[in-house]
Amino acid sequence: MKLTVIGTGYLGATHAAAMAEIGHDVLGIDVDPAKVDRLNAGDVPFFEPGLPELLRRNEEAGRLRFTTSYDDIGAFGDVHFLCVGTPQRKGEFAADMTYVDGAVSALLEVIRAGSVVVGKSTVPAGTAARISQRVERAGASLVWNPEFLREGFAVADTLTPDRIVMGSDSASAVETLCEVYRSILDTGTPLVTTDFATAELVKVAANSFLATKISFINAMAEVCEATGADVIDLALALSHDVRIGGRFLHAGLGFGGGCLPKDIRAFMARAGELGVDQALTFLREVDAINMRRRARMVDLARGLCDGSLAGKRIGVLGAAFKPNTDDIRDSPALDVALSAQQAGAAVRVYDPQAMGNARIDYPTLAYVDSAFDAAQGADVVLHLTEWSEFREIDPAALGEVVAERRIVDGRNALDRGRWRDAGWTYRALGRPYQGPPS
Ligand SMILES: NC(=O)c1ccc[n+]([C@@H]2O[C@H](COP(=O)([O-])OP(=O)(O)OC[C@H]3O[C@@H](n4cnc5c(N)ncnc54)[C@H](O)[C@@H]3O)[C@@H](O)[C@H]2O)c1
Image (cartoon, rainbow, N blue to C red; front, top):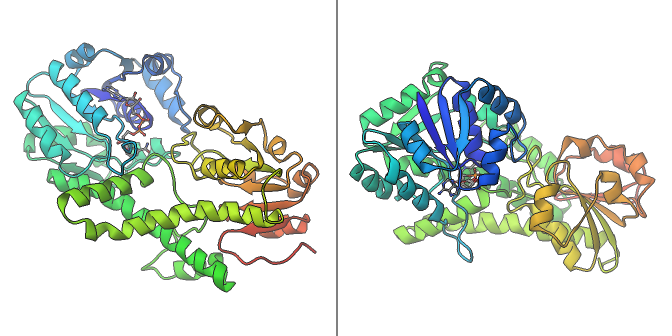
């Protein structure tokens, strides 16, 4: 089938390459010519494991290319995937729908009658019904097909999703989308077909649940800190209850990125518009718990530095919002690094993949080329993104370059025993302080 993908960021570029991989002819479009040039040259403009190979293989096979011209995509295909961004509106909780509305307007100028538009962006409930009226006036149909991929696992999540959700009032449009996903559905992937509003809500409900689970264990971490309990043991014991389970029950610096924070905020804003804001009041607390972890991280660093960060040197390990991505949108790591700098510390940051993005968005921080450079002369080292590279650091070797062997593990991911054995004072969120190393 001939498909187009509108917006080729983290979601769209992955979706375009994956659709080509399952045998379709795909034309991606983006308003950013530099991004399009790079994609056409087989170069993924962001870090996503496995995506460069997928992109190149399908470009070489002649099934995938990219353009900046809407005329090209109107002439090319009859199924158009909407993958543009829906960031948080500046100064508000609500989603900024400018890009979705702009892309729909541009598409409707060129679309052929009988085409199917497939919405994948995460949008407030009610968006699909609104867009559908415009799409139908152009003689086309709309399906809302929310995307659940995780950065870092985006290729596998797109080729082997755990479920596919389609919301529409057009049976034939749903049938067309089932044809697009035929090879994936034939492997037994669960399919839920429903109405527009439910399809939109599935995405934000899933993210709200995950955010709540993370903030639940981080709230427990706060209580652990006050009682001397250990949140790692607590979470382990909870996880043996199959009704609770251990996934997303890892206490630490909390969530960030381009999805969870803005999605729960947009969900609260939409609930307010719908008059059901009380139903989601708990998400305010989920958000607040999450943000408090960042402040607590800075407090732990301050505590290790005799009560003041002024004039101290801090080595920061991590800038991405989570490992295996270069995405720094709403990154807890960079938020903490900036707060430490604003408290008077000299901060040096290292991340295996996210330095380019971090330099652009956080230009006042200092960036260095390795974990050892970040730790050079440091009074305290902060572990803020759990890259495997950081777990593999030899604490004894790192101890040779720091001024003081003090580390705060913001991700509860380092081997506490190894670090203490190497003479480090180890602090972590939600875990009791065990005194100076022996
Ligand atoms: N990143 C994820 O892990 C993920 C997962 C699931 C859902 N989503 C949702 O997918 C959507 C896209 O997210 P993303 O992370 O890919 O964002 P992104 O910012 O990386 O990509 C959006 C792209 O759309 C392009 N664009 C903007 N206006 C356009 C227009 N009129 N025509 C063509 N292109 C246009 C931008 O230039 C950009 O390249 C969001 O709604 C997000 O919530 C993202």
